[in-house]
Image (tube, rainbow, N blue to C red):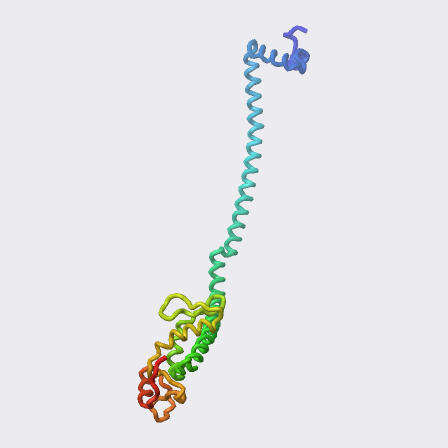
Length: 248
């Protein structure tokens, strides 16, 4: 059929028959169109570009829709998170609340514990003091002893300062006038060493011999019943009573 008698359908049918599905022939035919039928080739290019733009436009709109959806979901989650944070106090607030709640109770418990420790320390110290006083008012090899009232009122406080209570509950006895402690296998040994050093420091006014009654000294000499509390008062009592004055 002559080309001038072929319609559009015949031309398209002839092209398909010519190139078929052979990609090489398709490319060769497209090249020929661009070379020999430029207007047709350009029109085909424009139509293809328009189709691609239409396809891309639809995909862009689809993607934009998904982006909007995800953004809305993210904003919703952020709102939920903000609300949750507002309902739950932060760590600092929780710590402060706990401190306010428990600090008074802990303070009272510490006060009781400190008091109990002080009572225990005093009780342990008193054990050593009692041992020392018992030795002071007991005659030594020369038959000399401390006046009991002096020993209990004056010497006891001085000796108390020499007693230390360790963290494990054991007792130490500091050397008189020294920084170190007395050595000894037992507390009795250490107390005895302290008493031996303490005896010479007792004023002679308060030293008794076996000949003394050892009944103790009372203020006023007239039986007022008030116990003397200073060495000066005791010394005055001794001078008035004519008690023995000796030395260890």
